[in-house]
Image (cartoon, rainbow, N blue to C red; front, top):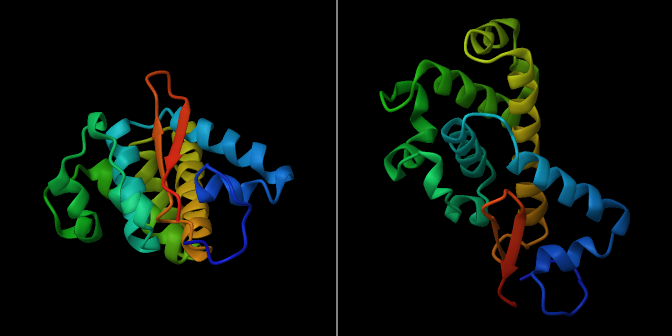
Length: 169
């Protein structure tokens, strides 16, 4: 249930909350669409998304699955302990470390970590990773803080377009 007053209606709470700030609504939807079309390896994307979901404690993100993106339930469950796990490649471990630092202490993203990432991703790939991580961090916290995190289910259709559905509170 939303922690702020939002307009009544049939749509998900997150969408109704965005109607309160129409100058942001289009930008949020464009960001969602851009992240859905990210060129990051889908499995890597899904692992990073889940690592940030664990940090954010976002109910929607913790329960959402991109089943065809190649990350197993075992891997998704292990993202909090990625550094000590043999379930992840060196590229995935570097990206998960990046996502963790991004979400918890971005000032600790040092040259060493960026150099390790550069061994696995191109410069555009690192920019992509950073913007993907930023989206999940920001919007996950947006929904959680405002109590919108149990009100919607975000998926993508076959062409990568965002589809948001939800239950009324």
